[in-house]
Image (cartoon, each protein chain N blue to C red):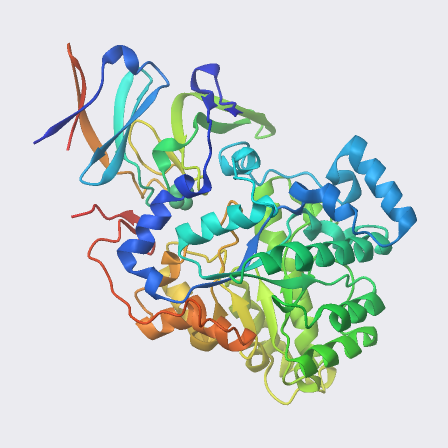
Length: 424
Length: 121
Ligand code: FES
């Protein structure tokens, strides 16, 4: 594959991409830290459903929509069926795996290719279990036709539960909910909640439907009764009116990925949903961590002045937020280390934080980003990397659960100080 | 200091790169801007294979006299190497991270003699 540079002299041709080789340094890091002996559950990672799009479209139940989708896909590609947008996740070719992974050679074994491709990166990162999510479908919440979201969600969920999750016990998913249609959302939980490999449900937060709408209460009640977590997965949309004020992808991403989760989370708390559904486990995914102390402080400060507007609350907003769960990535590892440590303290990271890589996306985090944190005990690291997820998803990890743990001398890179540590 | 043979001079042209292994770790040797540069193939961010990344000039903004924005262009001088894992950029000549000027690649000395290129480890 040819990657264009600033001048032809530096154009780069890469052939024979292999996920395991691309991540060879990750494998080494895991070995140096003895991570194979640590349970690592990746609560947010992705595949590209568009790699198998024709197959997924065959699962669409509405015959007229299916006919349109198949023909549109044939002449315009998947973007026209879903709801694509401008954006340069791959940094203009600088993050090379976006293009390379498409051409990766995977031996044919009758399973969709992402099963083997996913296991390759999981092995490199020392991830034992991964919760897989789609990628381009994460923009569907803003599709102007709610029936497209419903039909795509149903097709995708049937496809993944038929083909991917049964292929390997290490692959799990929180299934996509077509949240713009509350009844279809409820039906999805009813029909798919007990399928093998399904460990919860996921709402893409980039949408204009408020979580406090009465239409969703029966779904929350059902999830609570079934003991299945509800997660809100951040994404962005550059055409969203607020985000469209930004002119660089860095801004659209930094703001867009936090904004919708912050709004939904504030609505969730202020409307007293934690009081109505005290046993429902709620997870906020892929907004990083810095927004949580910000929102906690804003809400607590306002709440004591405006208690009458949140009469359902029996505690401070931040206390409800401390009962929720958060995934780690993209963790803000910047030059103020104290900020991150305080954040961990404020969210009770020891019990509430769940490791996520977001692989293969450009801002993915390796397990070493948690393992290298100097302010955590080894037990806390193990909790965040896997034991918290095991607990809240009720995962049976008996096939891979570690017995012993060790630590080698040179970790190669210190992801906390962001410094190379030369091997002995 | 031990030396490791990298390549014959003609096998490492401008824009080319060669990898050697020293003490179990890879070192990437590139020729860029007419000079040889050798770095440990481990990025200070999260350990990615930085020497396998795209070499591309620094992007700069064009701001006119009246402070208005006029677009972007590539620098004619500053060449970066970009780590393919997440995109951290490093100045190829100094090994310093372009974003913060702080974090840096681990650099090795190179020798180019009549019989070829060597890296000193
Ligand atoms: S590891 Fe190099 S940019 Fe992250």
